Structure formats: C-alpha cells, structure tokens
Length: 67
Image 1 (tube, rainbow, N blue to C red):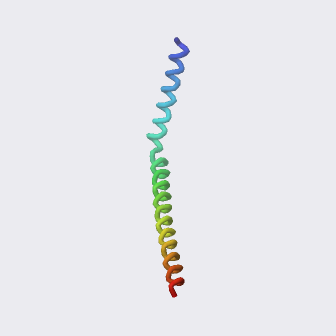
Image 2: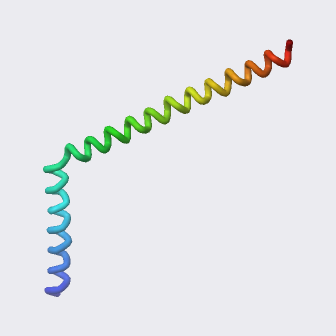
Image 3: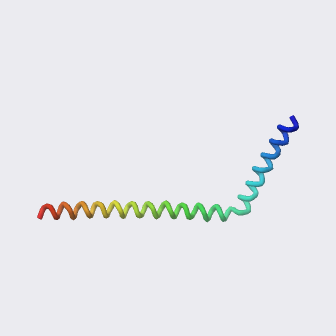
C-alpha cells in the first residue's frame, strides 16, 4: 500500500509542478495561443481570396466563351 500511495503522491507533485510552471509562465502560452489565432485568421483570409480568384476566373472564362 505504501508503494501505491507513494505513486499517487508523486503524480500529485508532478501535476502541482506543471500547474506552478503554467502559473508563472502564462505569458508564453498566451503568446502561442495568440499566434495560433493569427495563423487561423490568416488561413481564413487567404481561403476567401482564393475563392474570389476562382470566381473571377470562372466569370472571365464565361465571358470569353460568349464573345
């Protein structure tokens, strides 16, 4: 039983150490999260411009065929 209890305490101390690290270095995670949000926004903007380019190309092809 002592072995099991020592494993439980070790896991508890490890979790506490991780929470302490995150608490003192939260700005690192905020920076990473902000960068990821910017990355997703950038992908979204590029996807919209790509869709617009495809529509413009399709319209140009249709106009070229009609003439």
